[in-house]
Every structure is written in C-alpha cells, then in structure tokens.
Image (cartoon, rainbow, N blue to C red; front, side):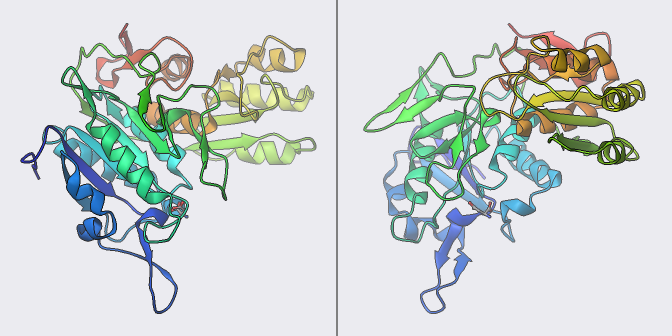
Length: 366
Ligand code: ASP
C-alpha cells in the first residue's frame, strides 16, 4: 500500500465511519455512507495537493457510538501494517466517541514518530455548509507538514474547527455547533486561520529511544462511577461488587471532593484492599484534582484513592484499560496513572514498557 509518487509526503486516509463520510441520497433525502474510493469526487481539492493520499475504509462503516476496543485494535493494526510506508495518517471518525478513540490510540501507539490526526464533522461532506471538507483538507495538510524533514506533529491529535488539539486532552462538548470539542486543560497544538500556526512548545517532544510499537491489550473490567448528591450505598456497593472489576474512575466534585459518609469511605477502602484501582477525576471540565485541599478530598486520599490530576475521563478510563490490559501489578497501575504516558496529564512524561517487567516498569524518557 505504498504511494509516494507525487510529492514529498504520503498520507494514509482511513475512513472508519461517522457523519463526515455520508452524502445525501438525492431521491430519498436519507444520509448514506459513500465509497471512499471516490473521495476526489466530493473533495476535488485532494487531487491538487503536492502529496499523495491513499484511502482505505472500514466496511461496514461504524457509527462511532458503536465503537468497541477491538475496533481501536483494528485501527492500530492498519497504522502498524502501513507505518513505514506513509509519512502520516488521518483517521475519519464519528464525533460521538472520538475523544475515547483519540485517547486510546495515544497509549496504544507507543513511540509514535508520525502524525495520526483524527477528524470528522457535524455535517456530512456532501451537504451544503458542511464542516467536513475544511476539517478533512486541513487535517491532511497538517499530517503532511514537515519541518527539517520531520513531521510537524508526531502525536495522536484531533483537528476540528480551526484547532488542532492533543487527542487525549479533548472532550466532546457540543452536539450542535461546529466547535464540537474542547481541550480545557491543554493549549491547542495549532490554530488555523489564513495560516496554520503551530505551537511548537505544546507539541509532544519525544526523544526517540525506542522504535514504534503497537499495543493491542486492553482490559475492559473498569467502570466510571459518577457521584451525585443522594447516590445510595446500594448503588455504590453494586458497582464495586461487580465480579472481575479491576479499576474505577471515580468522578468527584470540584478539586476531587466527595461526601464524607462513613459507609462510603469504608466501601472504597474495602475495594482498594481487594486490589481495585480507584482514580479520582473531577466532574469539572477545567482544573485538576487536589485531594489535600478539603477534608472531603483528604479522606479519599487517606483511604488509597489515587489522583487523576487534570486528566479527562476519556483519557483516564482508556489509560486504565491499557495498564490493566498489560497485566500490570496494582503498584504499576498506580505508578502509571501518576505519570504522563502520552501527554494526557500535566506530569513528567514516562515511557511505558510492559515487557520490562516489574523492576523497570517505566523508563524516564526525558
Ligand atoms: N453518531 C455519529 C458518530 O459518532 C455522529 C458523528 O459522526 O458526528 O459516528
């Protein structure tokens, strides 16, 4: 699947599904996926790029609300099989679970040194006023952009409505407007207007000690437990009693606070003693967990809940799946959650090396 005849860069465009790849059937008015082999018919601009675009599509295409971790594995496999034949990858994906996919891929594609840019749209590409065309064209251009012969953005990112954002920092925040995503705790990697303006300080800088390594193992024995005033002991007990449960993202209030009820703290403590990892993530969009600020947070810390810092829920749950999927010990998972593996939290960047064993679970990259 090599294609490098025309220009300086070769890009693999992977259509997984979602609104962007649909056109209106003129007779019925219904939205239908179109054959991506004919992408140039809908986006003729692609033909005038000075780089080569090869397309590949999932059959059938997948509404992203139906995405499962095995589909992330399929995406990783495509990238891995084609890694050395292309300079960059653009994934077209529905917006609904794009933040989860972007986060998962950022962990599964270890030592990535090429751009993997995910985009989609709110309106199908074949419709008037579509946002799909601009998103696609700019994502391709960014994937092909180089500086001193090296790709500008060698990480998993999401391009949407004039902004390139780190993939594991985003959440979908709008079901209506074109600006569907926000990255509240991390600045954009690039802003797009007349020019594409990269923020080179924001782009992940890696010292490429290791070769690219795809990972496929994820453990889905995890839950997201969102607190609300009035949540019952029965509900919490039922969730924490799930057989095989290994990890919990506990969505708390503010800086990581929760009710101080004795039964609650005791139940969390019991789960932790059983080896279940509990990670504290704030329900707030912006800011981070600081469990030592209030007594209501401190109790969680004392019982062994670990801080998810400024992670999004999407990044935290996929990271937990990833670490648990590699049979990390409880201690390793706790260590892994504390450190940035792919820029998902504001903390020192570390390399995850499942094969290194317990003695060297992580290697400081820089
Ligand atoms: N339900 C669609 C999906 O996520 C919405 C979209 O494409 O934006 O696949």
